[in-house]
Amino acid sequence: MKLFYKAKDERVVAEINRIYKIGFHLLSFGILADILLQAIGVRLEGSTVVDSSINLIEFAVLMLAWAVSLFLMSRKGLMDDNAFAEADRFPLKIYLAQGVLAGTVAAIVVSAVQFVSGAAWVSMGVPYMLLAFAAQLLFMVPTVTVLVLLITYATFCYAKRRRARAQAQMDGEDSEDSDLQR
Image 1 (cartoon, rainbow, N blue to C red):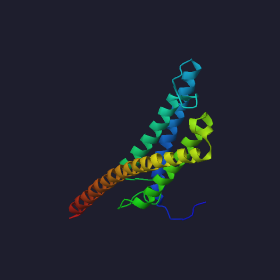
Image 2: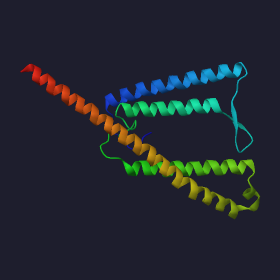
Image 3: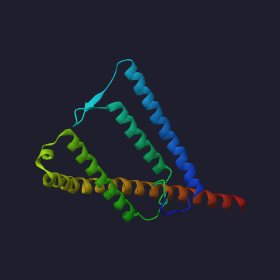
């Protein structure tokens, strides 16, 4: 359920759906390729903090699908898939709030992983656990917020430039059409 309903432009929705379809196919074929590689015995793994492993091919495919979708949205002059897709001004408050929320979630996840893996502060008691969580918050929230703002602002600037270029081309074609009618 959405808290605030805002009408969406059907053209934007159709364009976003095409872009997400490309991202979905890229992700699907990447996962299929990884399954086939695993079937023949090829597996690239990286170790994590909790002595488990992460499949690097799947991670690379996920990041590639995300980057391709973001790039294609920017090429079409869209910065996001929500109400700010074609915004003229950067919606700083919205993305600042998203960055703070993402940083808080990241700090919670990192603290939970450290807790489960048996970090040194786990056996020291609740005050040290809270101190470790506060340290995670102090590091993760500003870092993730800055990264979110940088990525969204770069996407916004590129998409706005692409929209201006497309509008200039359309205006040029309109003036050529009017010259031909004379």
